Length: 465
Image (cartoon, rainbow, N blue to C red; front, top):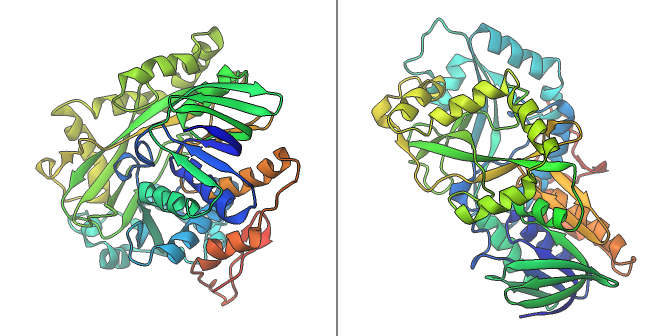
């Protein structure tokens, strides 16, 4: 269970699996290995119980700027196209309505401004404003029992992809292992990574791997390994554990509430589970935890490795948590995990989506929720809102909080280009074939004036169906 490879990928979640698929299927790299410490692919944060199952396009995520929405949209369309082409039976995804809901005059004005003035209506041709009557047709429980005097507006689109990222990751790996140049090792934990003259030696519980180039796509652990190699010294993590509450069948699709722009965490929303539409999930809550994996005490020491126990990290935490928006948010979310008190305090957020919900309708979702690593820049003493990538000498470290799963294929495409540079240009990436298997299958709508919307990936026009 060891050997020499051109490329070794560490981590078998959605990020590592998408890179394996991209390099195995669309490059001529001679030998590729994927190493995963768990006995199964996508067993931790990519598991469908441990994330919000959302494919983020940036259309209803109201904490995204227009620029970030453009970036995320491109990545989401790559993955949506893959799902359309490779999941005809809906084992990995479902397409449902999604909307962001504004309640009250102030929120309605904000949502109107976002759609009309900030350019989101132009960027997303299928996104449309709908009022109370049409909201009730799509999501009856959102309107039923609500004060008729309260103004309502929603931005709605039919392109609400709910995704089982675990099964999607497994699909990527299954397609990659059909290639003769690919090996996948599960139950194989990395114990050491050492630079060599020719690349890297990776010591694992299953033996030694030598490679010319490496990608560490191990979530929070990516920064831990990066720091051991001298990279990412100005970064630490703020691990956030998400949780959910469950209710019976209340929603047909996904309904978001408006998001505070200073918060990197998902807005509270309700949606039907990807595999069981009769179950509605509400959340997520967001609790700070001193661990890199939920429910695993062994990763507390890993968190301390990443944190570093230094003054810069401590001052950064203090600066972030003293924020007048973030601190109350953190304290409120601690309360939501308390027995009896937690559901009662969370109920108003649920009722903002479905007014008729009673306390006895809610059940805490045991076994749901993962840890998302929010990136802290100790030089600026601030949160980095989004993904982090560290590119070293013939090695890439990917740390992927939300929306990392949504943009996994775009990330894989970019990393593949970088890897070919690492490998001295000896190999070729067939991006045309990659696009044909992914974004070219994304179903496109037209703008209101009948012209095709602007759909590009990295500035390259996308082909319409």
